[in-house]
Image (cartoon, rainbow, N blue to C red; front, side, top):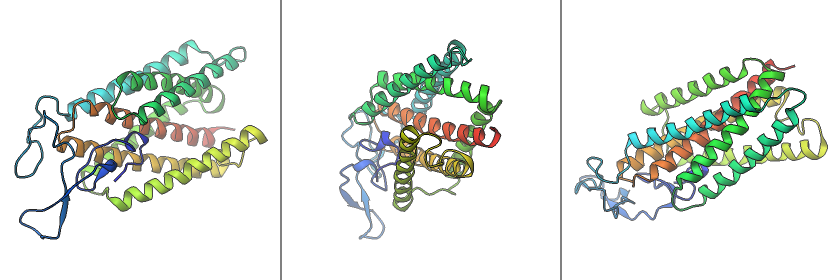
Length: 289
């Protein structure tokens, strides 16, 4: 199964649902239905993964095997750079009447650079930490300026509310996933992928109408429709988080190489940035004039 997160669309972690397009040779499950099929471990050739002969999974992290600590550490580094970039942009790029155009220019440039870096990494077979960290830093600069403008001119206090909302979604999805309230399977993944494609196409269309037609485009990012689509965006972000958690869990279970933890960090950073942006847009619409 392929994740909706672009980071995992070409390369990812596989287990019982065949994620990320791995060639999963089917093997009968021992002691069960002879017709029940289970995919082979995609990391069986990893020389650092000490395989359990019964279940085909590493009994413990060894050598160059990815662990949860690796994922947490690299995710913290990536998100930390986003925060540092945002704080520096907020402080060093003022958005008063005399400087807002210059600051917005820097934000747009940083956003384009982060987009390019993210796309390059998404289409690479292996993670490149420099690309991931560069994406995080430049994305932070773009978010910092946008957040400053919204906080100054649209909705004071929107930034901490958006941060708290993002943290609440992350915590809620994590609890729901760990307790089994969210089950990531092929149907779930297919629904999220279809919904995400439709959502992105609508937002691109709205942006094009706004650029060439002026105003709010088709109105998908303002007023009542803006709130509705913002909520849909947050829900999609929550679904992306569930897919990310599943990918990480499968990678650890199957002894993915340690370098794969950078991909996990990249995917989680992308998703959390997505949720923060949607939260910020909802709050700006509700509180703004």
